[in-house]
Length: 534
Image (cartoon, rainbow, N blue to C red; front, side):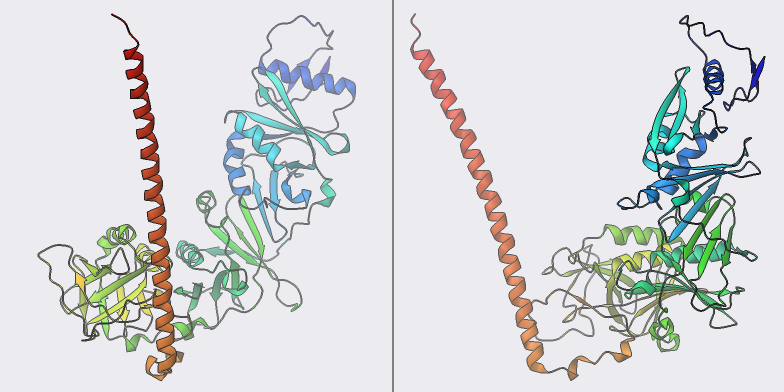
């Protein structure tokens, strides 16, 4: 009698007699197939390690998270692999990296077997998992010359896929961060995720491609994210960090499964050595995310925040209506595909949104229900994407200084600063959406007609006080810029009309060809009828 330990979930320990290898063909159950396989491999002397068993149910969701880390076009084959290891205690861990970030998953249950580690190509493992049922398990076996096997149940038999992987010694060393982890509260986690959506995506501005945890003020720590056009900040945190952090923006941190895997904990590497790179670890119950901090220094973001005491007009929206207003903003027509310009108007009685479909159309006015306001009349324009995002974050109050100063939307300790879109000329007409609504000229409209304005131009992110007023610019330059803008718009409109005319000509030509074919068919029918003899 020989005892063989199998790794199939249905037969962890099975005694199998010395087989006589009776090759009578008969169906084998999944359990019998695995017993036969492991016994034969043991007798051949090829069974060098206990296979690493992975449940498909956990792998299906885990591979989705690893795909956000593994680079798709890397020239290093080792980065296209998962490192799978079984620890001394039996825990099975899977790791992926792009050299700057490391993501590790620990499976729910430990397994029996000696410590082992190997590399498996991610694409090969993903293809096998897609073909397996969620109740199945796959088994990894190390082979000679790094030709590993991925084995799985296949209709009561054993399916096997061979994969070639680099040696496990070539895999980058996983950083180890010592120290006590800091619990991340739910409010801090949500602030990091909200600020991350406002971070920059431009590779030429590395410090802005992440979230700054600003601890420069001992009484109030901030979480800040900006791309130079809008800025989000949240305060009222007290964190045990001595220096500010720059958390890189990464889609894995916003991944749903990672956010639903329990409370976050954060650790920062020792910063005593100024030359060493600072690493950051964010871990949940089963996942661990290690990344390097962004290079450079985060700018002094507080200089871009307008002084709240300077706001003259305050608009208050109903919290229950924010989602509905955000949906309306996203569905409104837009004449400016680049800057997504939308207007906000307070006329002393009601708060309204201004929109139009074509640049030459008058502005349509849509009232916001139950919105209130105080202060002088004002009309300001901004990017609808930022305004909609602020409403989705639950910011209910809008503070306005004037038509060219940044908007400040806030609620409690959270705020978003949005740079306005500057439009040349004033709002001449506001077309009401319903006959019952009337329109009027704004206080900034001119009495004499103005030429068609060119496309809006966005303000830069620096504080608006540094922007020179319009009357200080040379009149000749303004006239030249205006003429160039009008000429550009005329050329664009002419090209659009030529394209429309070309499409109409092609349609007419196609219809003429169809008519000629129909006429030829009628002629052929008539000729065939004339040949008939009665």
